[in-house]
Length: 335
Image (cartoon, rainbow, N blue to C red):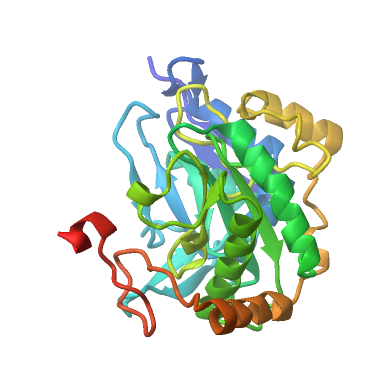
């Protein structure tokens, strides 16, 4: 007999959880009820990361071993108390995505099998001007998490020199993410240009270990600074999101003091609520002091003026941008 539906109350709303005993992580035995209770336990933290942001849902209705899909448009059965925000894709088409404004919205999405939340770096009242610059430190074959840690610590110095405050978190996989809160005064194109300048400066300081090469065949055994995570319609898993791997890891916010010693395996669906109860949301103050991008954009202009470094390739789904280099991998171009 299937278990009866579970009802959880948060913020004055009751969220119904269907099939609570459905196993989502067979290796660990975690069920849908465990997933929803996890998001209840870290509710204030995950809401801080998602609040008012158009959010794509990464859904696994039958658990991590079943089929999955990304849901960009708000589900048709979206409750009227969960607002939406209209975003524009690179193609020019639009979509209305759900924008959590209270913890119950996160639980409601988790009941749909949403493991990972992918918020846009904008708020629903202004979807054309990002308020976060996001940097993804992505280990390439031959490198690992410890290499990403080394790059993150060097990145902190680069950011400090540009008047930018970075907030690190584990990706839930092998890499690290660093988010920089910024004033929503610049376009996606300008924020991406600033991210490229930051990435190039990090690469200059450690060219043997860090790369900005878009084409995988040119990266080598280095940490790739994925500047295109700042492009329109590119999103990064939110803080506290559960990642779809067998051991149920989560993307864990860290203080800079924790970065040298923390390891991704420390943070999962079972351990994170206890950490949250103990230390709270270590990124709670992230939005209090948004940064300006003037110095980073000045660096981008200097790179172009003095070194001839202009744009880098966009993701394939983007229209060709003015000044963008050829969007073909080098080995094919040579042929």
